[in-house]
Length: 236
Image 1 (tube, helix red, strand yellow):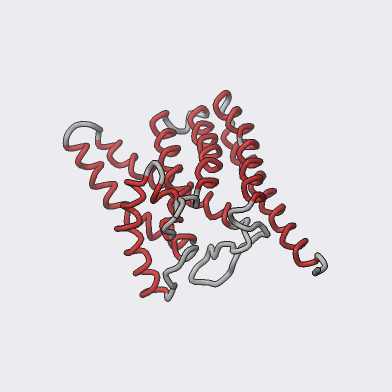
Image 2 (cartoon, helix red, strand yellow):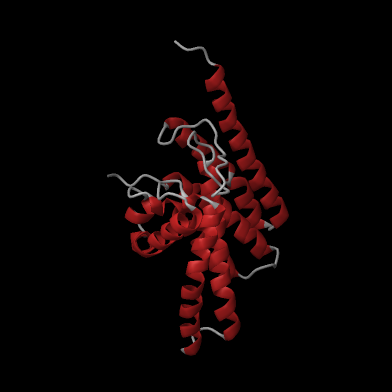
């Protein structure tokens, strides 16, 4: 099966995450290293929710080594917790496509990241402060990327159950793997060049964040308009 799930999420999310990270960096709020950490971990996070799909880009793409780790070791634990503790079935756009799922994944990753970071500290590759800060920023980037993924999936007809185990679905009117989905991703990506240029040249983190929220809100409202249009169109 062709690995297609996540392609749009990856590059669209990366544009906006890079803009946010470098806006904060140029505002003097974070360092160059932190900006890179947020950008790279955000890219992984933007693909991460699709570890519940066998045809996902994270499992078959350029970072399939990382993807297979999440698919083979992290997802079984997350889905087990979801089934036993919250009665959430193992399915695509299930637990990993929710705030609860992101939180569980972060909780599972935290001891691993801090453990590896501590080993680097013991070998004098990083100082103690970096050993604490770096894992935290990795988790921030992964969470941010995952949230972008959920937002983008909310544009589709299947939607996303953000608040599992509550069965409240946020959905739009776009079918996955269609030209409309590709066009919307392209428009969002191109629109993201505006905050990216602002971030790289001047900073203005608050402006970049406001622009990003506005762009994705506009995209969601557009997807909702397609859903309403489908309901009101006469049947032939």
